[in-house]
Amino acid sequence: MKKIGVVEGYYGEISKFDDRKKIIESLNKYNLNFYLYAAKEDPFLRSHLDIEYTKEWLSAFRSFVNFSTDLSVEIGVGLAPVKTAHLSGLKEKIKIFSEQGVKSISILFDDIEGGFCFEKQLEIFNDVKTSFSELSFDFCPTVYATELIDKDKNHNEYFNDFMKYFPKSNNFFWTGDKVISLEMSNNCQSSLFGFNNENIYIWDNYFTVDSCPKNINLSFCDHLSHEFISSKNCYLINLTGMPRTDKLLVELFGAFKVGEKDSFETILLRHGVDERLLDLIHLLNPNSKKKLQDKDRHKINEIMFSWFHPLKNEWYPYLHNLKKGENL
Image 1: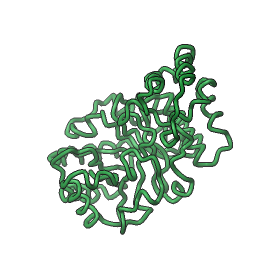
Image 2: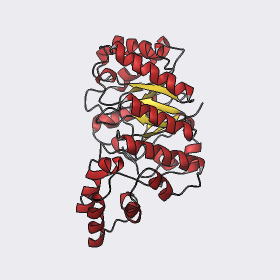
Image 3: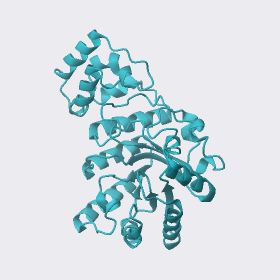
Image 4: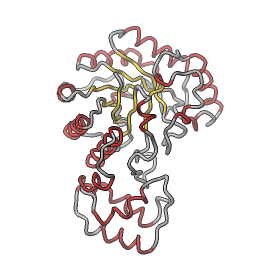
């Protein structure tokens, strides 16, 4: 089964289950079928794998899984054993999530600044795959984008080991040329020679705001093509943690994927974007030439103080930066 959907994999405030269920409803509406729970700020997925969730949280998670299953959306979980000594805790977490109905586990080694070793990571990955043969597993390497390959000697050596020893039949995540790539195509995988396209899973950070706090990237998925998505066994866009914005992003991604006839502007208006902002929305497209004139600054300022909507509350700091030209 192809996995096309979203990943809750950003830094910042963790979503509430009610908001997650609304995302699931949006995924179902556009025939998107996968939600990867990999919240960076959930310590029980990363630095504290050895500590158990409360019974109340697990009950709420199981309800979330059941709700999603009823809407034909699969829930996956991303676990990050950043402390290799926590292998027993990792296995226990996998067992617990399996008992909640999760069948897809991602083992994530992204965003580790030091002390990483591909050989040890691969040992952990192979160990859990063998121990839980009834589940499906994929892998996120520490070097998960082209720009990280030559970050320093350790990253370069790591990537060479990954290319040499990672089994070509296993699936792994890649974000493209950049951590936040502004173009997603076969070209962004050129450094991954020897791997099959079907085994390269895409974690698309285009809409992410945690790594670029002054910007909010927004377009009708101008950074990718239908052909590229169609070629993928797994393509996930990273959410932002802003509930209203995330529902908008799911609709944009879903509508783009299926070739929905509604225009970009129609979708924006449906989610509460002020009509006066439509003429300036191109300024949020990172691939466009941004020319902010004085009249535009005045208009943005006017909109900020007369547009009343929950979406505006999420976008206010980005509009403020846009008005000041600090997003450029």
